[in-house]
Amino acid sequence: MAAITTAPGTYDEVDPNTSYLENNKGLMGWLFTLDHKRIGVMYLISVLMAFALGGIFALLLRAELFTKGQTLIDAETYNRAFSLHGVVMIFLFLIPAIPAALGNIILPIQLGAKDVAFPKLNLLSLYIYVFGACFAVYSMIHGGVDTGWTFYTPYSSSDPAHGGVGTSSSVIPMTLSVLIMGFSSVLTGVNFIATIHKMRAPGLTWRRLSLFAWSLYATAIIQILATPVLAITFLLLTMERFLGLGIFDPRLGGDPVLYQHFFWFYSHPAVYIMIVPGMGIVSDLIATFSRREPFGYMAIAMSSIALALLGFLVWGHHLFVAGMSEYATMVFSALTFLVAIPSGVKVFNWIATLYKGSISLQSPMLWALSFIFLFTIGGLTGLFLGMLAVDVHLHDTYFVVAHFHYVMVGGTVMGFLGGLHYWWPKFTGKLYNESWAIAGWLFVFLGFNVTFLVQFVLGSRGMPRRSYDYLPQYEFLHQISTVGSWILGFGFLLLGAMFVRSLLNGRPAPRNPWGSAALEWMTPTPPPPYNFVSDPVITRGQYDYHLATDDELYEGFDDPLLSHKSRKGGVDEGKEDA
Image 1: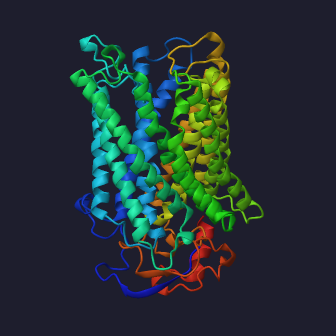
Image 2 (image 1 turned 180 degrees about the horizontal axis):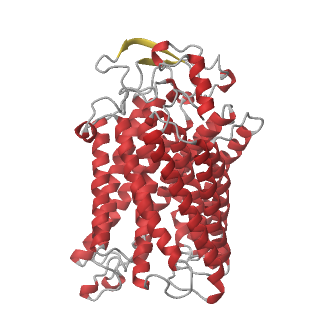
Image 3 (image 1 turned 90 degrees about the horizontal axis):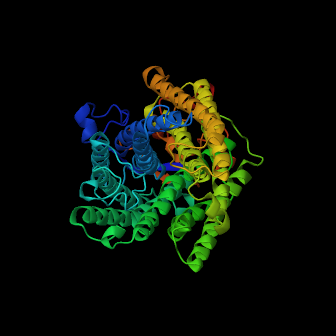
């Protein structure tokens, strides 16, 4: 993807033959590291633990809904499990998963940089995230919340001990945990913007950036501008709860719709914090596994920026039935259709890139193709919810649940898993079993569609979401959805076992197992502490796949940037292993 030469001067403070995993071993070496790769790996472990916890809550919910009436748990426990599933998946996993974990590991290498702009700030953001996550776990142990992941007032602002309605005393610790993790998100965004502006290697112009780097740049803009709004909202909620101020609670003279405006002004841009980095990963995967330059490179890059900016203008479509004026609802409906254009630009350009490409259906590419298929369904069903007349019927039904999961799981999670499969050999130095990877993908893909496709039918027939019980005519479709969740869960277990097996017994990965021309694959595997033995100078663009034959792929690269394998041998072995 990028041709580089080496500039004078090397990093003498570390052994260039030592990987970042071997340098400064020991627990303290990890806990106080400033290496972006180690920080990214610790983020990765944290978000995967959160994903496992959120998945357990999801399986519990679907098991309860297998039959009408009580199956396993009572209504109160169901409400708490539902709320915790949403909070853990969104705030502990989906928002930080790609930017904080994979972004930290890969972005500086893609920029030809030694590290992020502010390494100490990067480590601080990790500890703030962990501290916030511990706060959230405390709230779960303390009793959990039953307000849903949106913490809607008056349920979240009224204290039952003082005559309020419905919620436990864990709401405030839970909202404070989200506030704390918001600081981590902002610090990560600041770091990434500074890194992309100031730390790029010589010759790496804006038009030579990877599309993953563009997506993280757009995401960082959203993180910095939107997250403070959520922080202020939760601080106001806390003040109302403890001081009895009438801000959101109508019993105290407040306005609950004001809370919805504040919350969704953050939470709809937060959808793009989750999905835009996944789009960046898919752009890189499509280019690598079709051996083509992305069709409409700048259109894809600018569509990421457009999503970041337009995402701030459409929060009102969550409030179509909340009592807004008819003129406001028409404006937000029109803007909702407008925001679909940048997403459509990406999908059409990905398909154009695939056209006449030399497509290789290896496991990362399967996740990328799944992303395109599932995200397209999620995006198109979002247009139904953007239509005023249709949304009145579908609002607060399982149609919304299915749409949301096709965007978040079918988009963000598929992109995350694609990136994890793609870069796993690079940052671990180990290969995984490709047959297991494909089997895991198949179970996840089938299980996901069985789980959520029927929910579009449930919603169109009027099945309300967030309901503990349902009418008899919905039981069969709920049972199909629950069986799908078991298939989905088995797929994730298989993938987890595959990655653990790779770490314990996986063969050493060659430097470039996918035959990619991307800059991150020009470093040894795993990379040294400062990524490059010599300062890289970029002389070609990021996606020059018209030069990517086995002999031409490494033309212009100096030996210090290669691993112990020969130039030709490393690629050939990688193809066999992959």
